[in-house]
Length: 281
Image (cartoon, rainbow, N blue to C red; front, side, top):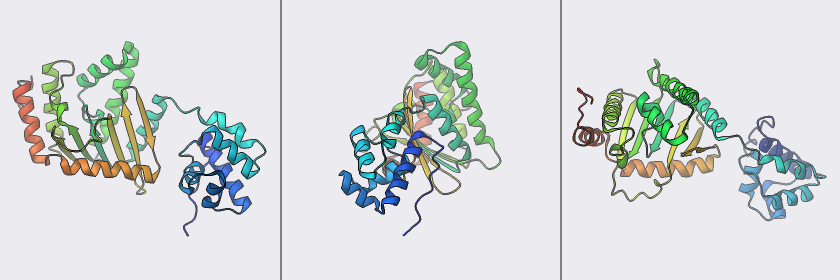
């Protein structure tokens, strides 16, 4: 049997709570399955609680406190588990993972941040968040800084799947979109950047909920980031990441080939935005 995964209780209240549950369970001499049976949940759910990747509802927390003889310690910790980081804090944590990643797999219904032009990101930030000038400049600066990874001597491997609608959705202006698509095509000429377009007629239905990124880290582990407008969340649990990875694999299988995707992007740029790679609008 593999050794239990190490958990640093200093990283979050959820981790501290999970560490406490694990210690009390081991003191009682129970397996995760045995504890799960006593509080009427699956052993996999106990595992997620102990790893700090799932926060139990109050009723379950109270049951764990009683069964494990925690003398109210778990009840006292529970209200603080919900004090999760803000969206920006989660985003900054994702950026730390992104800076380490050796491979990145992205699906998006907008042009992803790593391949946006500066004018495209300014149009997005201005439309979505109504930022003050100072806030907008800070967001643009952070995003441009992230893009520097693609220019490193050993850049990460980047694979992007875009919903076909992205090629025709006007952000800012027709001229801006033409220049953005020209920039995207220029990046795909790099050996480590790959683009696929998911066509309208795809049978894949899991593409309707915003964007997702799968990051492969140097130690071989994977983390996920799912994002909507003004919201986002990091997923670390291997089982949950595996579900998203399977969905990404299906999208990749249903998407156009990189060559066909490049042709379609060029066609949209030239016909819809009256722009060519050599003469951006």
